[in-house]
Each structure stands twice: as structure tokens, then as C-alpha cells.
Length: 132
Length: 313
Image 1 (cartoon, rainbow over the protein chains, first blue to last red):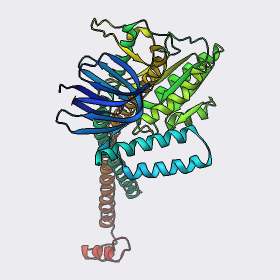
Image 2 (tube, rainbow over the protein chains, first blue to last red):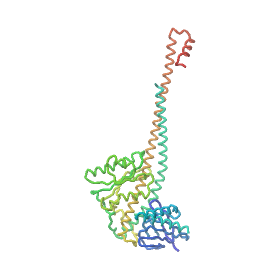
Image 3 (tube, rainbow over the protein chains, first blue to last red):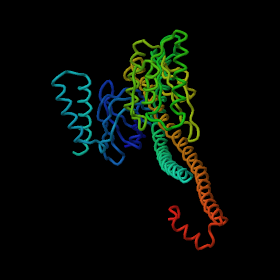
């Protein structure tokens, strides 16, 4: 299977850069998978788990908290305001954050709490698939 | 008395010496931190560049869709102003030049009857404007050491919300740009709206993009993100500039302390020598006065007197 160049960039640093066979994520209009030779594409990325299939068939997971994706030629770039690789996620902290946000949500319905829950869920998903 | 002066000088030299130790330490700390701050600037660059690339694609594909964030900006209405300074002093003119520039701008707009809404970053700025009774819309403090992207978002939120609501027509920022380790430059730059010309591409290899969602929907969040990342870049540069200014100020302070110690020691040595000379003169004068007196007939009597006198004991 042919591969392409993928980079996951955050404002603080370049999180991932290298070859990949396939990258999946959730765009503004639904799940999307990128293979080599994808048509030029520009779109938004939701808060989601980004799955990177490396050339040696290993899988790298990352939690992406919204951003943009650009596919052009041999390059695929995800620009995310906040993102972390599965290996960097503090599972305990995410679990605590999820619990705390759910508790607060029970008291008052708030968009920011829903966003916090979504963030914590994505972090947990990304790190759990990695462990499985 | 001369001995008293010597003691005072000795004490002063000691205090200058300990101040010198502190300024030297601060200089070393600042210079070690600059390296890290510069590293952060360069690791933030790819994001900013890639994001510009995306906007450029958008501009190349068709004409740029209409957006509140695009345009030349109209300064004759209400202007939003972000001022970036440090939380702490001891960095030479770093804070004061930026704050003076901001104050001049605000005052001159005031004289023309124009309103300015100020957002300030850094404790020094907050205190400065409060003292001068210039109203501050929002402030963000305790971040100049290590600004994060979240901080940039907070600033963007404060200043872009009224911009999006149409309450302010343009947003400027006054900050110190970090051009290199040797040169930093205080600059006023435009945050929003963005001049569409900077996205004009001259590359021929523009792709025919599929958009999801449509360019009209994607443009606003994209440009907002672009402004955020610009704020972040400026924050990082301001932080590095602060350290560079601090390093220079502290190096100068250390040098001054050295010079002060040198001249103080010179004065102290002279005072000590003076005291010794005076003492010898007193003894010699006393002895001579005694020797010439006819009441004393032999040296043994003189020695006897000296042993009995309270001063000799």
C-alpha cells in the first residue's frame, strides 16, 4: 500500500510528522479517511480521535480538539488548536475531568460543560484504543 | 571620626557586592531562558505558516469569500488595542517604552474624539493604566513567563468578540518583536481585519480543492484561528524580548556594581590611610611635644608617662 506525508501541527509544536498509509478523522460533514492520492481537500475537523496507520502497520492515535485539514498532492496536514498523541494523554486526569464535567452538567446545562465532556471522552477513546 | 567613615564605606561595598551577585544571577537566568523562548518561537512557526498556506489556497481557488476578518480596517471608528508587556520589571526600558507608545496613541485618539478599547497583557501594563485612569477592557496577567496557546485564545476572545459584534472596527497590537537575539523592535501591527493582499499567491501550483463545508462557512473560523495564532506568535516573541531586555539590563547593572565597588574601595582605602596617617602624626606630635618640654629629663620618664596615660593602653 502506498503512503503519503502526514503532519499533525499544533500552535505549540509539530506533534506528528512522517509517512502514513491511512489517516482517519471526523470532518465537519462526517467521518473521513485519507489514502495516498486523495483529491485536494480543505475542511474543518471536529473534536475527534485521529487514527494514523503507519507504513509498518502500527497504529498511532491522537486526540484532536477541532481544527482544519488540508490535503494537497503528497501532503496531508491537520492544523489543530489543541491535540495530543495517545501516549501523552494522562488517562487518570481525563477520567477525573470527565467525572467533574458530568457532575457539573447534572446541575446546570451548559455548552462549555458539554465541550469539556467531549474533550475528555476523545482523550479516553484515543488512549484506550491504543491500549487495546 | 575617620574610622567611622571607613566602617560606613565597608558596609556599602558589602551591600553593592551582594546586589551584584543578584544581578549576575538574574542575567544568567535570563540568558538561559532566552534559548528556550527562541525554541518555542521556532516550534510555533510551522502552524502559523501552514495556516497561511490554507488561507492562500482558499484565496487562489476562487476569490476569497467575504468575511468580517478581511479588509483594510477603519481607524476613524472605535479601535481595539492590545498592549503586550511583562509581569515584572528589571528589564530596562522594555515595559515603559511600550506603555508610553500605547498611551500616546490613546491620548492622541482621545484628542481627536476617537474611542479606544484597551486589552492589556502583563501586570506592569495593568498598573500603568490604572494609575493614569485609562479604562482597561480586559487584562491577562502572570503569563509573560510562559505564554500558552490557551492564553492567546483568551486574548482573542476578549478583543474579537466586540470586533465580531461590530462594536470596534479594527484591532491593533503593540508588542515587542523578537527579530534576533540582538535586536528587538517595538511595533504596532494590525490584528484584524486582515489585509487580503498578504494571501495573494504567486504560485502556479494551486490545487482545485474540494471544500467541506463550503468556503463561505470555512473562512470565518479559519481567519479567527489565524488571528489567534498571530497573537500567540506575538506573545512568544514578546516573552523572548522581555528576557533579552532583562539580560541586557542585568548585565549593565552588574557592570555598574563592579565599577561602584572599585571606586568605593578606592575611597575606603584612602580613608583608612588617612586615619593611619593621622594617628601616626598624633603620636609623633605628642612625643615631640613631650620631648621638647623641659619637665621631662630622660626617656625613661617619657616611657613611664606613656604607660600611665589612658590613651596608650
